[in-house]
Length: 222
Ligand code: SF4
Image 1 (cartoon, rainbow, N blue to C red):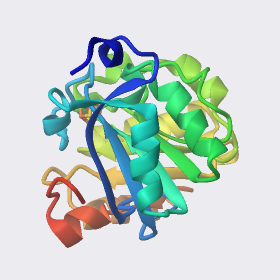
Image 2 (spheres, protein in one colour):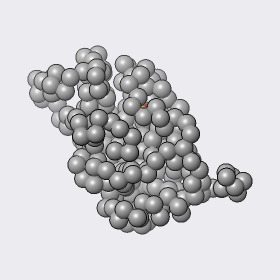
Image 3 (cartoon, rainbow, N blue to C red):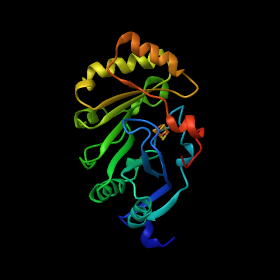
Protein backbone atom coordinates (compact mmCIF):
# COMPACT_ATOMS: atom_id res chain seq x y z
CA UNK A 1 0.00 0.00 0.00
CA UNK A 2 1.53 3.31 -1.01
CA UNK A 3 1.71 6.07 1.61
CA UNK A 4 0.25 8.50 -0.92
CA UNK A 5 -2.93 6.45 -1.25
CA UNK A 6 -3.33 6.09 2.54
CA UNK A 7 -3.31 9.88 2.91
CA UNK A 8 -5.05 10.72 -0.34
CA UNK A 9 -8.25 12.75 -0.37
CA UNK A 10 -9.42 10.32 -3.04
CA UNK A 11 -8.89 7.08 -1.08
CA UNK A 12 -11.78 4.95 0.09
CA UNK A 13 -11.72 1.77 2.13
CA UNK A 14 -13.88 -0.66 0.17
CA UNK A 15 -15.29 -4.01 1.32
CA UNK A 16 -16.76 -5.01 -2.03
CA UNK A 17 -18.10 -3.75 -5.35
CA UNK A 18 -20.60 -6.04 -7.03
CA UNK A 19 -23.52 -6.19 -9.44
CA UNK A 20 -26.81 -7.63 -8.24
CA UNK A 21 -30.53 -6.95 -8.03
CA UNK A 22 -31.53 -4.20 -5.66
CA UNK A 23 -32.93 -6.03 -2.66
CA UNK A 24 -35.14 -3.34 -1.19
CA UNK A 25 -36.47 0.21 -1.40
CA UNK A 26 -38.12 1.83 -4.42
CA UNK A 27 -35.84 0.31 -7.03
CA UNK A 28 -36.18 -3.24 -5.70
CA UNK A 29 -35.50 -5.85 -8.36
CA UNK A 30 -33.56 -3.54 -10.67
CA UNK A 31 -29.98 -4.44 -11.65
CA UNK A 32 -27.69 -2.23 -9.58
CA UNK A 33 -23.99 -1.87 -8.81
CA UNK A 34 -23.29 -1.80 -5.08
CA UNK A 35 -20.26 -0.06 -3.62
CA UNK A 36 -19.88 -1.24 -0.03
CA UNK A 37 -17.66 1.00 2.07
CA UNK A 38 -15.89 -0.48 5.09
CA UNK A 39 -16.60 0.56 8.67
CA UNK A 40 -19.54 1.52 10.88
CA UNK A 41 -19.65 3.34 14.22
CA UNK A 42 -22.89 1.59 15.22
CA UNK A 43 -23.58 -1.97 16.38
CA UNK A 44 -27.24 -2.74 15.69
CA UNK A 45 -28.27 -6.05 17.25
CA UNK A 46 -29.58 -7.41 13.93
CA UNK A 47 -26.71 -6.22 11.72
CA UNK A 48 -26.30 -8.41 8.64
CA UNK A 49 -23.12 -6.79 7.31
CA UNK A 50 -20.70 -7.29 10.19
CA UNK A 51 -18.12 -8.43 7.64
CA UNK A 52 -17.94 -4.77 6.55
CA UNK A 53 -16.96 -3.46 9.98
CA UNK A 54 -13.24 -3.84 9.30
CA UNK A 55 -10.73 -4.98 6.71
CA UNK A 56 -11.50 -3.93 3.18
CA UNK A 57 -9.01 -2.48 0.74
CA UNK A 58 -7.95 1.12 0.18
CA UNK A 59 -8.83 2.13 -3.36
CA UNK A 60 -8.46 5.35 -5.28
CA UNK A 61 -11.77 6.94 -6.29
CA UNK A 62 -10.81 6.66 -9.95
CA UNK A 63 -10.41 2.89 -9.55
CA UNK A 64 -13.81 2.65 -7.86
CA UNK A 65 -15.34 4.63 -10.73
CA UNK A 66 -13.67 2.37 -13.30
CA UNK A 67 -14.96 -0.76 -11.59
CA UNK A 68 -18.49 0.65 -11.44
CA UNK A 69 -18.31 1.64 -15.12
CA UNK A 70 -17.24 -1.89 -16.08
CA UNK A 71 -20.78 -3.09 -15.31
CA UNK A 72 -22.40 -0.33 -17.42
CA UNK A 73 -25.16 0.15 -14.84
CA UNK A 74 -28.03 2.60 -14.68
CA UNK A 75 -28.35 2.36 -10.88
CA UNK A 76 -25.55 2.59 -8.31
CA UNK A 77 -26.05 2.19 -4.56
CA UNK A 78 -23.40 3.27 -2.08
CA UNK A 79 -23.77 1.28 1.13
CA UNK A 80 -21.85 -0.11 4.08
CA UNK A 81 -21.33 -0.46 6.98
CA UNK A 82 -22.04 3.21 7.29
CA UNK A 83 -20.69 4.82 4.13
CA UNK A 84 -20.78 8.37 5.51
CA UNK A 85 -18.33 7.36 8.23
CA UNK A 86 -15.67 7.89 5.53
CA UNK A 87 -15.50 11.60 4.60
CA UNK A 88 -14.34 10.67 1.10
CA UNK A 89 -17.75 9.11 0.49
CA UNK A 90 -19.11 12.59 -0.28
CA UNK A 91 -16.92 13.28 -3.34
CA UNK A 92 -17.52 9.71 -4.51
CA UNK A 93 -21.28 10.33 -4.50
CA UNK A 94 -20.82 13.51 -6.51
CA UNK A 95 -18.53 11.78 -9.01
CA UNK A 96 -21.10 9.01 -9.50
CA UNK A 97 -23.84 11.58 -10.13
CA UNK A 98 -21.58 13.49 -12.54
CA UNK A 99 -21.04 10.25 -14.46
CA UNK A 100 -24.78 10.04 -15.08
CA UNK A 101 -25.78 7.17 -12.81
CA UNK A 102 -28.94 7.16 -10.71
CA UNK A 103 -27.29 7.10 -7.31
CA UNK A 104 -28.72 6.08 -3.96
CA UNK A 105 -27.09 6.10 -0.54
CA UNK A 106 -27.99 3.66 2.22
CA UNK A 107 -27.21 5.37 5.50
CA UNK A 108 -28.22 5.07 9.13
CA UNK A 109 -29.73 8.01 10.95
CA UNK A 110 -26.58 8.86 12.88
CA UNK A 111 -24.40 10.68 10.36
CA UNK A 112 -25.00 14.25 9.14
CA UNK A 113 -26.63 14.42 5.69
CA UNK A 114 -26.08 18.13 5.04
CA UNK A 115 -23.21 17.71 2.57
CA UNK A 116 -24.61 14.81 0.54
CA UNK A 117 -25.01 15.76 -3.13
CA UNK A 118 -28.69 16.71 -3.60
CA UNK A 119 -28.92 14.48 -6.69
CA UNK A 120 -28.43 11.41 -4.50
CA UNK A 121 -31.51 9.53 -3.28
CA UNK A 122 -30.92 9.08 0.43
CA UNK A 123 -32.37 5.95 2.03
CA UNK A 124 -32.17 6.81 5.72
CA UNK A 125 -32.50 3.95 8.19
CA UNK A 126 -33.85 5.40 11.44
CA UNK A 127 -32.81 3.15 14.30
CA UNK A 128 -35.68 1.78 16.37
CA UNK A 129 -35.62 0.98 20.12
CA UNK A 130 -34.91 -2.74 19.58
CA UNK A 131 -31.94 -2.00 17.30
CA UNK A 132 -29.98 -1.00 20.39
CA UNK A 133 -28.79 2.17 18.62
CA UNK A 134 -31.83 4.47 18.79
CA UNK A 135 -29.90 7.02 20.86
CA UNK A 136 -27.58 7.60 17.87
CA UNK A 137 -30.30 8.97 15.57
CA UNK A 138 -29.52 12.55 14.53
CA UNK A 139 -32.97 14.06 14.08
CA UNK A 140 -31.50 17.23 12.58
CA UNK A 141 -31.34 15.10 9.43
CA UNK A 142 -35.13 15.01 9.19
CA UNK A 143 -35.17 18.65 8.06
CA UNK A 144 -32.72 17.78 5.26
CA UNK A 145 -34.86 15.12 3.61
CA UNK A 146 -35.83 15.78 -0.01
CA UNK A 147 -38.95 14.67 -1.85
CA UNK A 148 -37.03 11.88 -3.64
CA UNK A 149 -35.61 10.43 -0.42
CA UNK A 150 -36.80 7.38 1.49
CA UNK A 151 -36.95 6.61 5.20
CA UNK A 152 -36.62 3.03 6.37
CA UNK A 153 -37.53 1.38 9.66
CA UNK A 154 -36.33 -2.13 10.50
CA UNK A 155 -39.08 -3.38 12.81
CA UNK A 156 -38.17 -6.01 15.42
CA UNK A 157 -41.35 -6.12 17.50
CA UNK A 158 -44.61 -4.31 18.27
CA UNK A 159 -42.86 -1.64 20.33
CA UNK A 160 -40.69 -0.80 17.32
CA UNK A 161 -43.79 -0.65 15.14
CA UNK A 162 -45.54 1.80 17.48
CA UNK A 163 -42.38 3.90 17.71
CA UNK A 164 -42.12 4.05 13.93
CA UNK A 165 -45.77 5.09 13.64
CA UNK A 166 -45.09 7.90 16.08
CA UNK A 167 -42.10 9.08 14.02
CA UNK A 168 -44.23 9.12 10.86
CA UNK A 169 -46.56 11.58 12.56
CA UNK A 170 -43.88 13.56 14.37
CA UNK A 171 -41.98 14.37 11.16
CA UNK A 172 -44.94 14.21 8.74
CA UNK A 173 -42.91 11.79 6.66
CA UNK A 174 -45.69 10.63 4.36
CA UNK A 175 -45.93 14.07 2.78
CA UNK A 176 -42.19 14.77 2.72
CA UNK A 177 -40.44 11.75 1.19
CA UNK A 178 -41.22 9.43 -1.68
CA UNK A 179 -41.33 6.20 0.31
CA UNK A 180 -41.51 5.07 3.91
CA UNK A 181 -40.17 1.55 4.15
CA UNK A 182 -41.13 -0.92 6.88
CA UNK A 183 -38.97 -4.05 6.95
CA UNK A 184 -39.43 -6.92 9.41
CA UNK A 185 -36.15 -7.71 11.16
CA UNK A 186 -35.02 -11.01 9.67
CA UNK A 187 -35.63 -13.84 12.15
CA UNK A 188 -37.27 -11.57 14.73
CA UNK A 189 -40.64 -10.60 13.22
CA UNK A 190 -42.52 -12.37 10.46
CA UNK A 191 -43.34 -10.45 7.33
CA UNK A 192 -46.93 -11.63 7.57
CA UNK A 193 -47.38 -10.20 11.07
CA UNK A 194 -45.96 -6.84 10.05
CA UNK A 195 -48.13 -6.82 6.91
CA UNK A 196 -51.24 -7.40 9.02
CA UNK A 197 -50.34 -4.54 11.38
CA UNK A 198 -49.79 -2.17 8.44
CA UNK A 199 -53.12 -3.11 6.89
CA UNK A 200 -55.03 -2.87 10.18
CA UNK A 201 -53.74 0.67 10.70
CA UNK A 202 -53.93 1.65 7.00
CA UNK A 203 -50.43 3.11 7.19
CA UNK A 204 -49.00 5.00 4.18
CA UNK A 205 -45.89 2.84 4.08
CA UNK A 206 -44.28 0.31 1.78
CA UNK A 207 -43.87 -2.99 3.62
CA UNK A 208 -40.91 -4.83 2.12
CA UNK A 209 -39.05 -8.10 2.32
CA UNK A 210 -35.38 -8.18 1.35
CA UNK A 211 -35.20 -9.77 -2.09
CA UNK A 212 -31.49 -10.61 -1.85
CA UNK A 213 -32.12 -12.68 1.28
CA UNK A 214 -34.87 -14.63 -0.45
CA UNK A 215 -32.77 -15.21 -3.58
CA UNK A 216 -29.27 -15.65 -2.18
CA UNK A 217 -29.71 -16.24 1.56
CA UNK A 218 -27.73 -13.08 2.32
CA UNK A 219 -24.40 -14.31 0.93
CA UNK A 220 -21.84 -11.49 0.52
CA UNK A 221 -21.58 -10.28 -3.06
CA UNK A 222 -25.34 -10.25 -3.66
S1 SF4 B 1 -25.83 0.89 10.93
FE1 SF4 B 1 -26.05 -0.78 9.43
S2 SF4 B 1 -23.96 -1.58 9.15
FE2 SF4 B 1 -23.95 -0.36 11.04
S3 SF4 B 1 -24.33 -1.84 12.68
FE3 SF4 B 1 -26.33 -0.97 12.09
S4 SF4 B 1 -27.16 -2.41 10.54
FE4 SF4 B 1 -24.93 -2.82 10.75
